[in-house]
Image 1 (cartoon, rainbow, N blue to C red):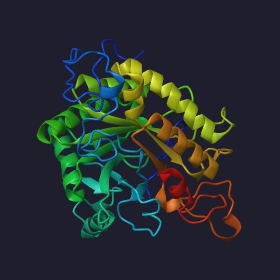
Image 2: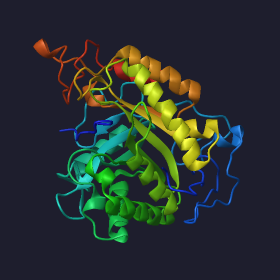
Image 3: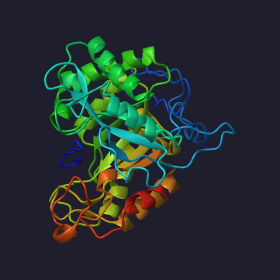
Image 4: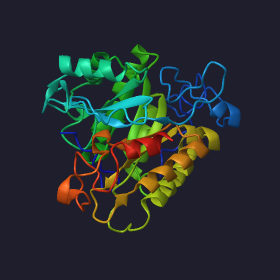
Length: 360
């Protein structure tokens, strides 16, 4: 995962008139392509605090109407099980990643494993035995996102649907970064395909995982959200990748995560016409634990606790980390490292310590 500098790695001026509310903010909100909404442009604090996506326990209220706590939803490999996966008792597992098979419109796990792979089916079944759900994450920083290789919106929607069905999931996350974020054609095609998919699957919860800086979302990310809105996509959550900010940032990673969230919160309020509470509830935060891909950036256990406290205070939808597989100390001379590894954090810790901090 890389955010400001970009890369959730595989595990091996906003548009004028953009006033429709998030699906999470008001039940029944339906954006028109003309930028209008069939609800008022501002939501009351009480109405805005309850997402309308009943399929996602991290986004919904319980039957009594009380808000659920901020969920913990780590990124895990779709193909390789780890003893670290279940630490923190996740509410939802983010299955990473579904991308193109290498040039066509065939979805594959990590671009290498068939969508119907029995190993992945068995893994998904084990992950959900505790009552947790799985959210299929499309994209990431490696390989090609399907919107860049499929020829039509209907073909792309079918590819997304095939992956969701294989995982038994009603939750789709789109991790869009790097070149895919700046490709206007694929951005538009993706929005059209997701809208088609939601028409077919009324219970489909959609989130976008986007890079962020302490200054907030950049113009490309805002344009992507504008495109989704213009195509009547009902977005449940915007998940911010609070990591890899770049060489100009050399301070506290926990503070940067909070600063980034606050800046994005202001943007989401403006873009979608949300109340304070609704904009917070429509946000999630994902941190790259330990040593990041940018030199000098290390996200510590105290940073994780700081993010969790903030998320609970603001009633964010969920917190996540890249990734469960990295939630352990590296071995030997690499126990504390300046280089990000795929299977350990690079900081001194006990196994699962970041999960416990994020779960609260």
